[in-house]
Image 1 (cartoon, helix red, strand yellow):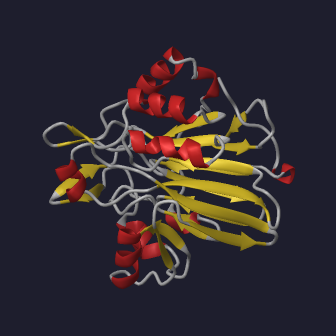
Image 2: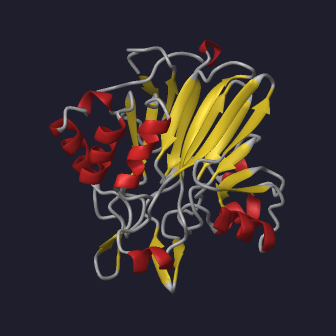
Image 3: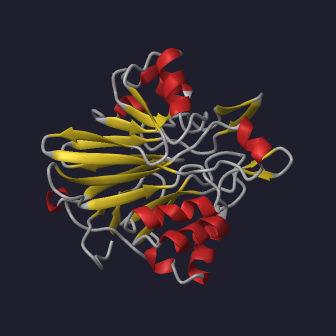
Length: 286
């Protein structure tokens, strides 16, 4: 079992897994949130075309309890990644780094005035108090069939590179977004060094007709094998009724591929701390 250790003074990243794909990341004075989803157990997320899914879990914190945010990294505009509670309660001046599709809608329809729509491989940088975060949009594909991809919102993965301003990145995080495994993801390893931590959106989400639109356990482990990150943090599993692949399926497949010792066992509501120190034995707390 991998665990993450350290303290904020060591230049590492504090991680709070709030639930679903919502993770709060803090590096020194800089804080960013991923895929804000604060619906409560029993509430329904709207997935488009009349489809809904009931939440099965509670978020670890409510949206009003968040600290000041320097940015939001949003993989795509789906109701379990950006919900009505986020829309109502997040500061409309917070920078939102996302797909061009989501940025346009959030700006024009909902009044979030600092949205940045990123093309694949495009990067933007946030800074606060000597801390810097560069976010690069990476490829992602929400479905295998071309027709179904046309019906779903565009999705992006992202590379988050944290470090002191004016110096090389200290810690790199890969966030998969709601992608399936396909050959286009291999270009990530050609362009960037392996990440210190890969945050993998799993769950094996299936739409009516049985169409798979997020990685199940086998796909998540295969993507980890291809990208070769130092550590793996599974998220986006067991939160909604459309998710059919449990966490245990990913853990078993990771073990089979010899990746089990890379998994960070940080469950819903737990916190962890990540440093870039090679071979560091990671700790989960909370």
